[in-house]
Length: 317
Image 1 (cartoon, rainbow, N blue to C red):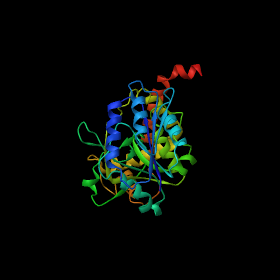
Image 2: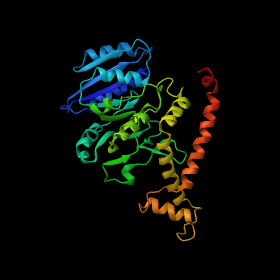
Image 3: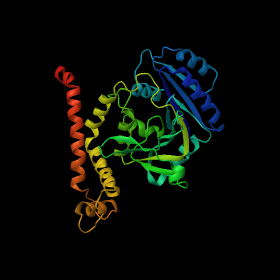
Image 4: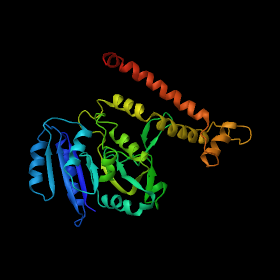
């Protein structure tokens, strides 16, 4: 198994240096890999640093974009220069810790019978040392959100957890599958590309996992302009995946209802509780309509806000 580690860089030179320093310290000596570094139009000396860094290492390819292409296009370009059978995408605002990569690699063999498509990991914020990411779920408003539970506490013996999605800050995917689904969607601009990729992978029948024994540090959204197009990107995700987000959001709405303190937990007199419990336990495959309607209402509220926010663009087009 040859692994292509792909890192796209836009400024944040100090973070890039720390990322590459910790990468060097934590990669197994016998790992068959190559490093693909893409400078995406940096202006803080990153380009010169990466060029010199690449000269000092074997199997390191440094690509310099003439202008800033953004996360999706830059990483897709990196794949074009790669040769590994597996791709490992890594943000330059991450710091790696000992033993982080082995569980991700091993997962594709250990989970083979479960058809893994992407494997992510646990990520902590250096600012407060709390978990920022343990996988992605869809909340009761239909929005993708990070799970922030600690697997070491919640299920210490569980090595892998299936999730709806994993963040783009650090994940592995078979090269063939990445190309099959078209890679990162270039309609997104520094946001939403990772969720779109996850959902495209799921649509092929592959499953998404998080390696609970792999943990890294992540300086969340450190790159300049990371959130400049947040609303526009989120709107595009909903336009493309609305039905999926509605269904998963309704499931979460139902779970929240079942455990809420003010929910009348009477199986015989509370019809919604009874039907919701039947769905949650697998006795019924039908999500209660009340849950679907509640989430659909929230999504419609957000869609109205987006329509007003981007009204001028719609008129121009």
